[in-house]
Image (cartoon, rainbow, N blue to C red; front, side):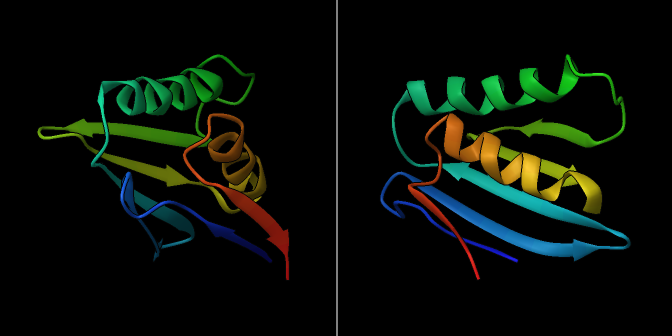
Length: 92
C-alpha cells in the first residue's frame, strides 16, 4: 500500500472506493499552473496503451475527478508525484 502527502494549502485531495475502482477528487486551491498539472496527468493516461485505466472528469471551479482501476493505482499515484501534486510517496 502507498501512503502519500500533499500540501493542503495548494490542493484538496480525497480518495474513496468506487465499486472495484478508486475515485480521486482533486480541488485546486493554488494558481492556474496547478490546473495544468492536473491536465498533464490526464494526458499521461489518455496517451498510453490502456484506454480504461484512468477516467478523467473536469468540473467548474477547479474540481477534478479521476476514477482509477485497481491495477493502475500505483501508476496514478506516481503520476501525481511526477507532476508535483503530491509531495511524498512511501510504501507502507
